[in-house]
Amino acid sequence: MSDFKRAKLNDSVSTNVIGTHSGSFQADEAMGCFLLRQLPEYRLSKIVRSRDKEVLETCDIVIDVGGIYDHEKKRYDHHQRDYDERFDAGKKDSTNGRCTKLSASGLVYRHYGKEVIKAHYPNLSDDHLDLVYVKLYDSLLEALDAIDTGVEISTTELVYKDTTGLSSRVGRLNPRWNEVDENGKEPIYDERFMEASNICGEEFLSVLTKIVESDLPAREVVEQAVLNRLETDGSGEIISLPTGGLPWKGHLYELEKLHKVEPLIKFVLYTDQGGMWRVQAVTVKGKAFENRLSLPEDWRGVRDEDLEKVTNIKGSRFVHTAGFIGGNTYYEGALEMAKVALQTSK
Image (cartoon, rainbow, N blue to C red):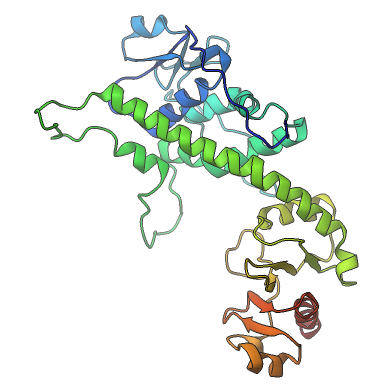
């Protein structure tokens, strides 16, 4: 089996019981229960939702309730006054620690996340497992922790509010105050909770699959392009990817640091779905729209024959008005566009 191919889990039901609180639910315990139920020890385990201490004491593992965080006792609550558990010391290249404490899902992921990943991808190498473990937290689990523990997404006023995220979708599954079905019956909280946990699971597996089956293979391609950058151009500031569509941005920043790349890469060449060669500017790390170097001002917004006249480069097809991307019919033309952009910046 390929390292990047997902395995089918055994559907044997564990006799161990997972406990969490009753009543209204949030994404953190819904996700935490899903994660535990991926493991052989708790595979498809019964979930008991209660706030009764005696009931919870009968459970094999308890999350998000009980006032205790003790890994040896398998108790994972995060509501204690002196609680301040975080995923790690902070993101790479950051002088600041993690913005959020761990919620129930974060605690479960900290202790069992690698086991969950290995259950689905048993052939991952240790290095790949470490990469996936951190990237998955950064991409999905950290947001659940932050939302549940009350960390604002921005320190400035938001210009719009997003209610399409996983936490919002889970929240909307809680029965409304006046909700009844056609027979006048109120919804059953435990049934809605299982629906919420399944939604969390779909999201988790979707992100996990993308990271393992798309991002990891792409990383190897990008790394080879970085190592071969001087063969692409003597400046070392242009790389060429053999195919388009693969995710390269996040990998590029990490690989530049890993391989001590200097000067930093300014442009990436690749083909689009129609076979046109693209030349794309690399953004400043942490910025969405600020480029390390943009394509020349007088090229921007110009197309086809008019652009060929301005660039004096055969095959020039377009340059975006923001200067972050351009296109050329030929590889040599795209490479020349990048080289001219470098030269004009000197």
